[in-house]
Image (cartoon, rainbow, N blue to C red; front, side):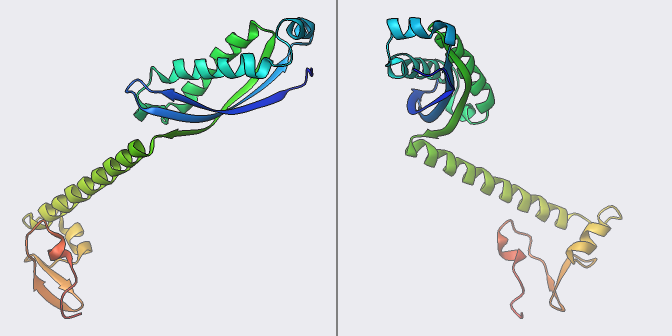
Length: 187
């Protein structure tokens, strides 16, 4: 039995408050309290890692992730790590095991949930792009004024709402579809 710092690393599964599976890899750096080493050997034996540390880590992680929605777990990773470390430190101190550091190395969700999050992000980006395109079309359609003269000039518009393409002047079509933004057919 060593009193040096030892690393325990394992995979753990938990559930978020919205019942999404959370899969983590967690590493715990710990040491046996030298003053309590004989007591640990007598009462627990050499299997303290599998008998005490692994169940404590699993239980504390489950209790901590169970109060967070899945969307917030990655954003609040530092807070969750601190809560898990505090919980494990408190739990293991009863047994004479000193926790030096807890690291949550990897957080994953079920593949279906990850795909749903990805689809949501893509939909939000597309909606944002469409809002931008509509806003630009509305600005381009605005009447001529000194305030938007510089913007219109930068975008290549003439005073009468015409767009210059490759030396040709074409009449703009006011539409929210990207077709009016395409290059002229003479290019």
